[in-house]
Image (cartoon, rainbow, N blue to C red):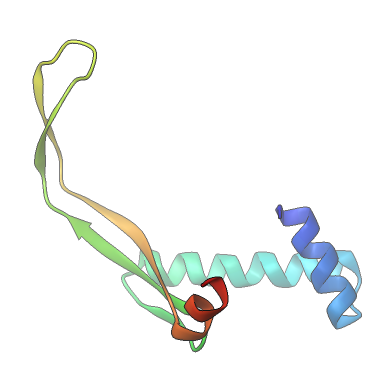
Length: 90
């Protein structure tokens, strides 16, 4: 499912127009993205938790040349599905 299909399904389910549904989805994603980028967790009970995770620096290898290189530490977004969501996927 892509974003356009999601918008269509939300519009049908909520009886909102596609434009209104797109605005709601865009706003929700923007709020989640900004909160996580500030270091906050966003918990949606039954669905999952969006958070930020820190990766340590590590040594890697260039697959083409085989030379070693240092991969720097980084912060990356993380999603942990909730129990209800996990149970649906089983």
